[in-house]
Structure formats: structure tokens, C-alpha cells
Length: 63
Image (cartoon, rainbow, N blue to C red; front, side, top):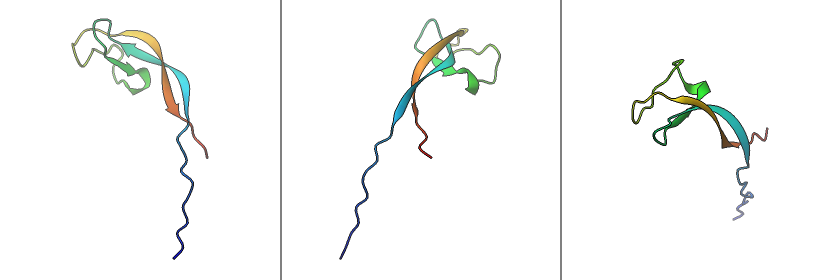
């Protein structure tokens, strides 16, 4: 029998800066593009969130 083993392709991640809402009192944060409220509250401690930016790893599209 012949088994063809394909080469394992590791995912490639790139750093991207995104706008976020972050909680000043705990570690909670969420991307702005996924919020439904103009002034969201923290889902962990229910405090008001402030605007900020974060660098996240995004999977690179190899199409």
C-alpha cells in the first residue's frame, strides 16, 4: 500500500493593532467591532469601559 503524507503546514500569525474597549479595573476587554453598545460595560465587573488599542495575533490568509 502507498500512503501519501502531506506536509504539515503550520499556521502563520501576524500582529495587528485593533481598537478595543477595556476595563480600567480588571482584565476585561473586547474588540470594538464586536460590540453592540456605544458605551459598553464590563461583563466581569459591570464597570464602564474605556477606549484603547491592543496588538493581537491574527491568522494570515494564504489564499
